[in-house]
Image (tube, rainbow, N blue to C red):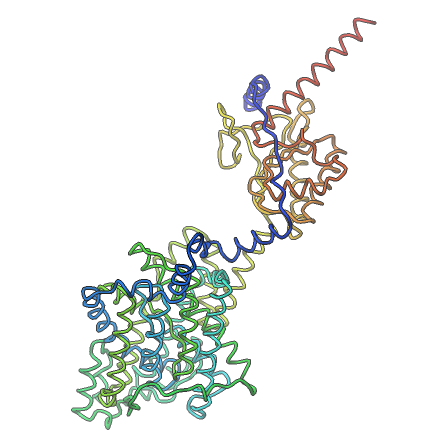
Length: 636
């Protein structure tokens, strides 16, 4: 029944007349023009220089200054009304940034004061260079965790705190240089290798590890592991649980303290002298603003590889988080954030930070969400937060002396628990099972191997996925939708029918050295299967390759077509190409110097035109043969 329908459609296709359009190569361009166009599309897809076209020199200088320093763009329009909103939001995020800064510094195994230093200078730099109105800058949990765990592999922060601090500042410098370089060279696509699936799994695993690490403070355990894996942490908890059991009755005072209880718990500890009853407190903090630290940077010695690797990983992680957060809130408020400018802003922010006793900072989601909800209008909210932190550093440091560490642990747990995004994980499972495997690899790798090990495994698996897509491109068989001239995937559209004598395949990827062997073998298999399924009178005559999705081809790819053509000729089958794109047809024409490989009558713009034209030619040949046979019979 299906064959009869197919034959009917085929006869109808033969009878209908269709205009056949010619496939033409693109206009000639020199190699330099092609290179220029390719570089522009690779590194300047947003064409940032278009705003300078046709402008006088003075205007170009102003636009250039505004591009480098976005504050010059919105600063002249700033007014008191905007400042009122920024003042409220700045004070609000400062109330969050101060305890978080102290907590995250401890998470990175750094002195608590460094966390406050990192909430003072970097926000000022970002206010000048950043393009986001909502990004609230400061230390973040993930980068703090990774930096602390990586540096701790070689240097102990307790036995050699000065060296550990030097390595942290040097890692921050390398992170900033790497980030700024990505922005300057417009290589931001590198961070795209951290897919959403990787980040969800990685952050969930890191959140659990960070939370478990806080059991040291929450349970009051003195002897606790510094390793970041799940097994060492839980082993440490169970082996030293007797320490928490022996804690006096005063332990409950701050064990479950939320973020807003910092002041209350500090006053309570001070009033009842809880530090004398086994409650661990921060201790005395140094007063004053950031001291210079450029003299502490290390560029030699056995730890240089460590700080470069730490800077690279923390730089990528913090950059990914900062840009993702900035773009999220920009989309909510309908304004644009320039990713490359953000890379430069965050990079220079960390470079300056490394000179002023700061460690890696970026835009944090929790602080940025508070900043947005509090009504921030511009980056001045970061300035207000910075000034508030400065006042704290100058005059309020003694007040934090009695802040219990258990509160800092609770703050960290409260902040990171939101990183576990179960709805997003379920959504990934529904949409793409391979992405779910990548996500779980990151999650379990962080839990059972290490933070950087889990991240590396997940990135490796994602890269493998990309390689598989390149080396094993999808090819599908097309059929005709009845009553139309449209050809679609036979598996997807059940009503589509095959055209007798034609094998129509769609290649859905660029053709290059990595996949020509697979494409050759898979195409020949299609042909063999087709020959096994058809009757003798409907033998295969044409292999039609629909190439709309083949965006590029290299010299190895050209050889694929030559080999296919030679193989098909032995089988009495013609190779037909449909809609080869500009680069593809240009290279095919150049490779066909003898003009016997790519003939005009085997090139078509659409599958419909190809089938109609070739069917008419095939019918004409059949009529000629039949007439010739009748003539011979009559003559005899």
